[in-house]
Amino acid sequence: MATSPTAPDALIHARGLTKRFDRLVAVDAIDFDVQRGEAFGFLGPNGAGKTSTMRMIGCVSSPSGGELRVLGLDPVLDGPRIRARLGVVPQADTLDMELRVDENLLTYARYFDIPRDVARARTQELLEFVQLKDRARDEVEPLSGGMKRRLTIARALVNDPGLLLLDEPTTGLDPQARHLVWDRLYRLKQRGVTIVLTTHYMDEAEQLCDRLVVMGQGEDRCLRVAAQPDRSLLDPRGARTPLSD
Image 1 (cartoon, rainbow, N blue to C red):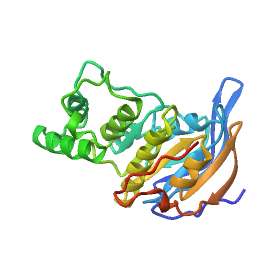
Image 2: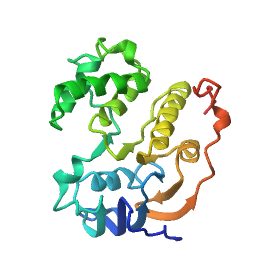
Image 3: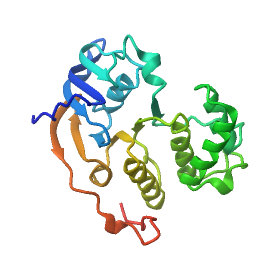
Image 4: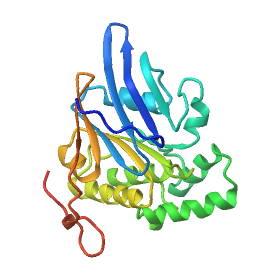
C-alpha cells in the first residue's frame, strides 16, 4: 500500500492501528495520516471496520494495538482534551426530540461551557449555514431526514472544532438531500475545517475527499489522491442540482 505523507502538523497519525473484539479483528493494522485542512475518507462496505476506526479517533474506543495520535495527543490518556476539540456526527442522529431545533444547539453548547450570549449567536449563525434558520423554533420530530442530518452537523460545529468526524453522513437520504449535505461539507472545508468521514458511496468519496483509504474486512487496501470535486454539480446559487444515484 502507498502510505500517506507524514508531516509534523498531521492532525491524526496512525501506524499499525488495530481493534479486536475477542477473536474478531475489526481493524487490522492500518496506516494513515490526516493533514490539516484536508477532507480524508474511509471508503468500504458495511463491516469493513470504518466505524470502529472512527470510534478510536473519537476517543470512545481504545485501540487494541498500534500507534494513534489525534491533535498531537494520545487518545487513551488525553481523551477528554481531544473530545473537547472535536466535532462528531454519528452514524445515527441523536437529536433531542423534546427540544426545539435551536434548543438542541443551545443545550449542547453547555457541555463546552460556552457563554450563553456566544451560544445564541453561534446557534443563529449555524442554523443559517445549514439552511434551517427559518425552522429554529420548530420541533425536531417533524423535520425531514435531510433536515435532521443538517441539524446534527450544525450541532457538531457548536464548539467551533478544527476537526470534524462524520460517520456515513448521508446514508438513507434522498439524492437532493445528499447533495445539499455535500455542499455544506465542501463549504466547511473551504473555511479550513479538517474533515474525516466514512462512506460506502464511491460518488460521495469522489466529491468530498482529497485522499482516502479503501477498507475491506478491517484492512486498508490502498490510498489514493482523489480528483478535485466536480463543481459543475453546483448551480449559480451554490445549491447542488439533483443527480441520480
